[in-house]
Image (cartoon, rainbow, N blue to C red; front, side, top):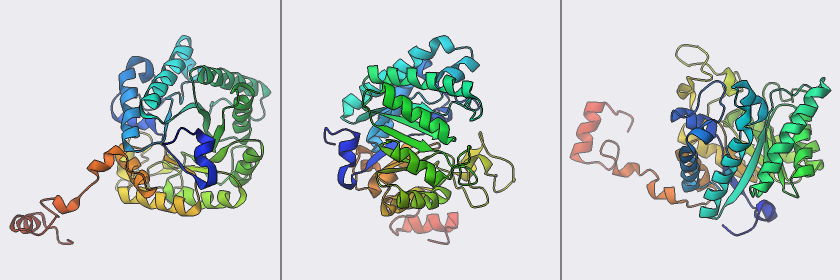
Length: 347
């Protein structure tokens, strides 16, 4: 990568690939509790967080985002760790900066949905603004290259996050991504496409969607956003097979039992690698400039995205080679015997 920052790398149709989804990846590894999804792991096992960042760099990300998602004041207060707020944020930022410096890529600070914002309660606005302010200031002091405000369900809260970045970010560019549930509106009633357009007009460097929906149900809205937004747009779906019947990953059902799968039984509705590859190809064709994966992401998925966009990260050395497989590879006496015993009738 060049030494250019976010805006320079997006010039003339350039693309940024970004790996997100640390919450579920760390929960799968046994270092984060499902439910509250609070990133205590940053303080309790910083070496694990550092390793996850390096794994995604190995898979091709252009950005290390500090793991401050749900590391804000309200979440830490809910587990009686508000006193650890600044230490958690600064530790996460330092880890991300370290890995970014090692690898020559960008480091982003992060804001997220507060879960307290109420469009009709002005006191909640002030609380959210104060939360955003302190996190932006810490990110600036720890050397972030740009700021992300993600998983915003309310246009009003997204606007507050953007304003905080503009007021306290000392010129750092802002990437603002909304989350689209059902229907295609923000919680405060604004059509998602219009909300993205308004955020772009208000000065966001990149606007778009993250989380909420999987590739199949996010891409149609991304196409509409591309039509109305002039600058770079973002698409970061979850890695689950959402459908028109269940547009969000939170509403998905187990295909065998019909039971809800969120948040602990999502493995039965995970995307395939081909699903992720097809998402990346469609996003590229639409003209998405800022492309990534959110909850459910893993390095083997992200490598699929990187390869579609012509990248050759180090993990490509280990890209699959089915021809070398003893069961489904080149025909041999052994493979024919294996097919017989395994009943691989469709090969």
